Image 1 (cartoon, rainbow, N blue to C red):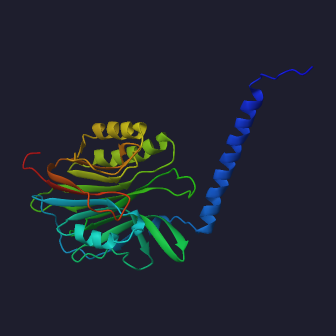
Image 2 (cartoon, rainbow, N blue to C red):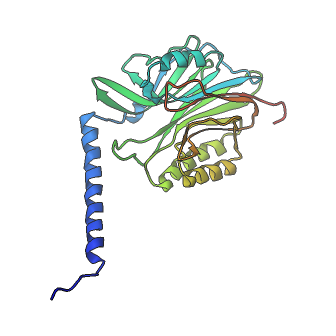
Image 3 (cartoon, one colour):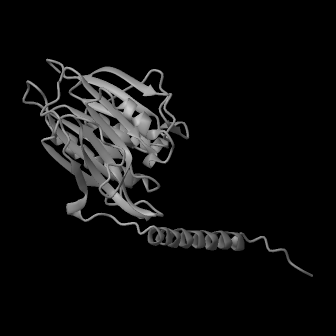
Length: 291
């Protein structure tokens, strides 16, 4: 006579073994991807590249026009034409997933604008490309720095980066701090919180107006909550869009613009632009006489 084994042990054992197998496969697939594309992170002294095509020393505080856009590494046709169109009349342009090839501009040559590019990593795909965040502006920043995440994203084992630029404003001793960020993805919520708290420290130390914008990868409630709490602690306001057609994942907005010490004139999502997997955002601020 046979006996039926109702013990849950074999089931849980198989689940456990499967989980371990998938974890090992995921880990080594990341190493394989890294080796196949020759993915490298830059040495500390080579993170920021610059093109000094700036045409102004200061930004007018009466009208500060910002473009913020994740360009999806320029993978889609038409992105360069859209970028050139959107860039008109902008004072500062914040690009995430900018991609460059060696000494080439990567399509980011705008007359009267210089740029600083903070490289997250480089990879080899027929040619050697580097990717990261780029801030373009008419005015030359008086100071530029970056923040690199201590944690790495899986699969590519690469960090995310934020670029900090400090600008002089015409007719006032106040300096404008602009932070261009790309939020770390596919990691623990605590790693995302760590990245945002590092930026929070920079915001709190700055005594003048601040703009903090980019692709935050806030695709779940936990990430949204973390970002909201940190921005509230930093006394940062969020730009609201009407209608709000920003890019979403799992019903959560990915791209945000926060500000402090400024007033909002207008904000717009460029819905007609489809040459990236993110919608571009245009925002105009001004510095009030008594903020």
